[in-house]
Amino acid sequence: MAVFDLFSKRQKRARGEVPDVYVYDDLPNPLRVQIVHIINDAFGVDHYHADHAENAYQSVNNILCRELGVFKLVDYPTSDKDSVFNFFLHEKSIETALDVVEICFKIIQFNIAEDQSYQYNTDRKIEPTDAIAELNERFKEHGVGYQFESGEIIRIDSEFLHAEAVKPALGVLRDKNFKGANEEFLKSHEHYRHGRYQECLVDALKAFESTMKTICNLRGWTTQSNDTAKNLIAICIKNGLFPAYFDSQFSSIRSLLESGIPTVRNKNGGHGQGTSPLVVPEYLARYALNLTATTILMMVEAHQTKK
Image (tube, rainbow, N blue to C red; front, side, top):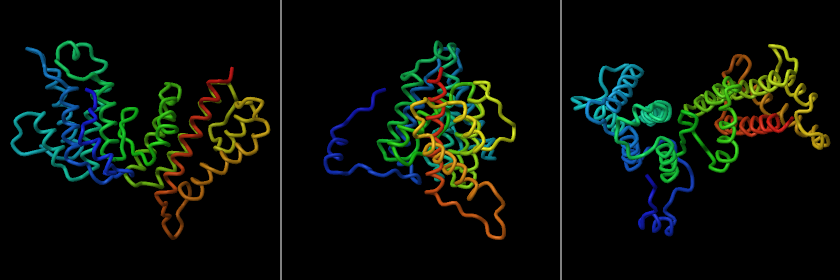
């Protein structure tokens, strides 16, 4: 369903009453209600004798109960649907509320979208791709810094960086050949969202290294299982991953790749902490994550372009 640009929204924009920075510790009630509407429209209503939507809500309820270690989400629910929605609308933990969103939209993207029987036997008001698009638009509308990408809720800090670097990087990593790198990159985002910044750095580098190893394997370039990022970068440059007219820029690109992600990880996330635990600040983790995204995108696009 389309997102309507209501008169009240236009007036708020005119008065400057729209969020200009993202928030991460609040899911406003109007946003929660809008998300419930999207899920309800996407799950749909079963035709006579069908139980697809009912089973979908039951799956969400069962997953949440098991993972949260509880027997029921709310007291005296009238249905699994009622249980899920009431729990989501009143849950105080933002991360747990986002768990509900992520599970529901995983089902929308991977179950409903691919199950023709589901689509045939339920009345749905919105298609899976449109449901995901509306969810992301609602997050943006309320200034809440999360998006649903590649089957997961990820945190975003800059709309420009997300649109120009992170989202395209996730797009190229959907290729089955880059499955390992994709999982590590998404895990890095998950660590970042939960404030585990040291782990974020470690998995960001893993994703970067896995991307280069995959490119080398696809092109038949010899690598060793214990090759570091520095070695892999050297192999890619030596074999001409970049066009010849980049020769004059090789030193600066190589310096960026070698002194960026690997150095950030090596100094802050990859070695023993000694007597004093290392504290990785959020801004450093964010920088490493965005640097990883832009570098992965550049490497994969160079690979795709090279004959």
